[in-house]
Image (cartoon, rainbow, N blue to C red; front, side, top):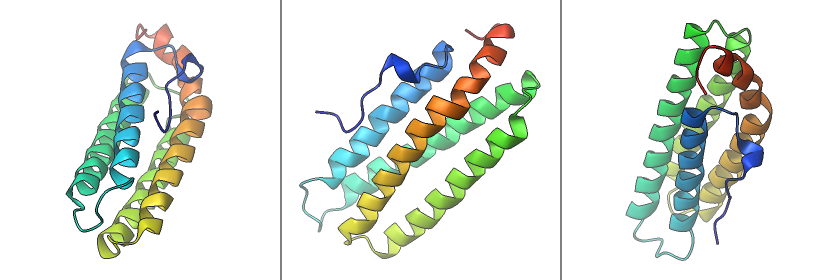
Length: 139
């Protein structure tokens, strides 16, 4: 059973973005799975899953922000600040993870933060730009 499941509740009404969000859910699930029931002496699967997730989130944020600029989205700065908060928090958590790799607590803190932040961000902030993107032909 997946840690988090995609549901139409998370749809922003833009296929490209919904597809990226679904990929994020998959990567979050991969990271969660990697942190469960493995030998803490072999952290390569966790490291790999974590880096895949971080890289994809960066790619996804750049995609959104490209369209914010292109479509002159009215909440661009506010949304970018939210992305910045996430990026700073993840940077901090990743630095702690790199120092404390054998500490399961940091892995759990990362997964909890990512899950809560992503789900709330999609349901609230990302849904707000759906209409703007649609009006500019991105459906």
